Image (cartoon, rainbow, N blue to C red; front, side, top):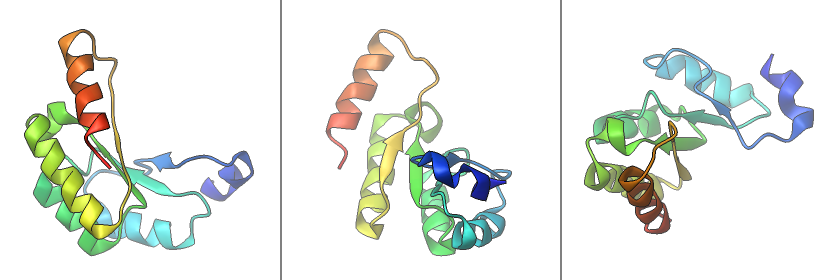
Length: 110
């Protein structure tokens, strides 16, 4: 199914399998013509390290609400940077202060 999406030049496919199937994501990533992004699998810095070790993602989507706040999300982003994995922020339609916090985090994240 993912191979059918290749002509559309997608940035990535988000969380195509259940969150705890890192082996499955790694296998899918090896043959997928579309990059694989994980977010539900990346709630903690330990999760991010496990994704990197399993080579399960091309992109990691961080969500400060799930990660334990801005500082934890920033630490996870630094881990991704060291591993050479791009990061983007996952958003569920935040408003007000939360949007401002996300913007600050986004601008401080490589």
